[in-house]
Structures are given as C-alpha cells and as structure tokens.
Length: 270
Image (cartoon, rainbow, N blue to C red; front, side, top):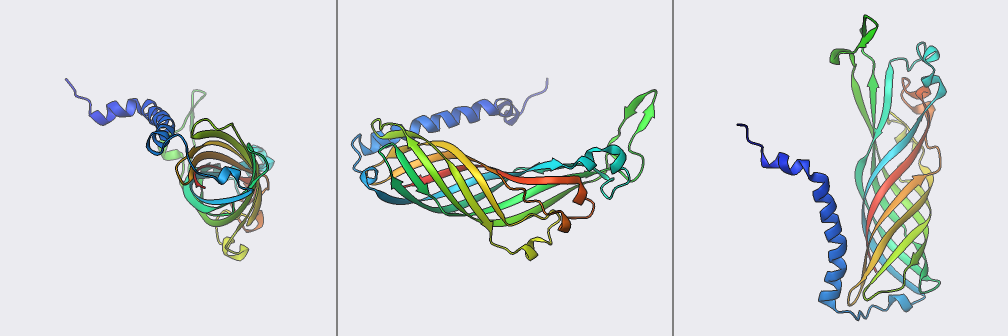
C-alpha cells in the first residue's frame, strides 16, 4: 500500500489554508491593537488639517498585451516577419516600492492623499515560436501535435525603476473603537528613471511615462502613538506604452498595444 507524503496532503488543501490564514490575519490585527494598546488611542492625526506618514509596499505586476490584426490574420502573418511566432503571453512578476504619505483632511471621513513613491518593477513576456520543422501531422483528419513539434519558448524581461506620483481620495467609515474601514481611489502619473536610449536595448521596448487609475480598500488600526493601515490597491495603466520601432523585428508587427497592470499590498504608517 502506497503512502502519501504529508506535503501532498497539505497541497490539496492549499487554497483553504491560505484563505484561513488571511481571515485570521484580518481579524487578529484589530483585536491585537485593541487588546494590547487599549480602546482609547491618543493618536491625534485625525484632527489635524495636515498630517504625514510613510509606507512599504509589495506588488505583483504584469502587462496587458493586445495582438495586432495582422498577427491574427493567418493569411497575412504567414508571409510576415512574425510568421514563426505562435503566441505572446505576459507573466506576473513581484517587486516592491516605498514612499511617503501627505494627508489633507477635508472632513472626518474624507481625505486627499499625495503619496509619492519609488517602485522597482520587472516585466516578463513569454514568446512561443513554431518549430522550424513540421508543426503537426494530419492523420485521418485529426491534428496530432507532439511535444517535439511545439517549438521553442523564449522569455524576455525588462526591468524598470519608476517614480510614481499618485493623487488619491480616501473615504473612511466612522471610527469603531480602534478601527476604520476605508476605500481609496484616484490617478497616478509615473515616469521611468532610465532614459529611452537605455530602454531601447530591451527585446520589447516600452516608453517611460504613463498615467494610471488606482482603486483599493483597507482598514486603519489605532495604536497608542500611531496608526497602521494595511491596504490592497489595483492599478491599471491608460497609455499605450509600446514602442514598435525599436522592438525585436520578429515581434514588431505582432503587438498593437501594451499597458501596465499591478496589484499592490501597502503597509501604511501614519
């Protein structure tokens, strides 16, 4: 009788375990703050017209890629420079950022935030090529594709250090004991620190400036002398940052547009 390794038993229930840990984390932090630091926090930043803080953040970023009509047209692509390209897919890549928080109090529940930050990003793109030999064998009307005929897969990456200048509105719930829930949203202007000439050596070339929409939610936890606010935020780039003229010749005409996208966890201290 075969025995099952304990890791595989845990792996079958991995999603349930992760979800349970997240729930315990969200429930446990407010309880910890109230239990260890009392229910009457003296943090007075809520009453100030101007206040400040800082944050650390970890993000998972990728690119939203759109194929060109020429690439999707099989009759055209068979004679084009990108005829050997089977597919182009983007991948999520982790990174981190840090910055400062400037807060303007408009109302007890409404704030305007300016949160300049520096973010470190890596964008990965996986390109699958057709095999130089036969792609498939047709036997009895069925298409049979073997692993040998799938062709090579190449991964291209581009690193970027971005300076981001988000301007955000924050709407908070009424304070309950030592916690508040909140929603946040706005826009951000961002630019890359390296020049375009340096970026032109990448396999897939992108421009250095972008504008994005940002939206998220979180909760504030009042400690005795400060507030801690974990937050999750989604960012969607609006500009087409693809620069075809300097991209690899076999990919130039296959891509119509590229836009940035990221999911970020913020740890705010105020």
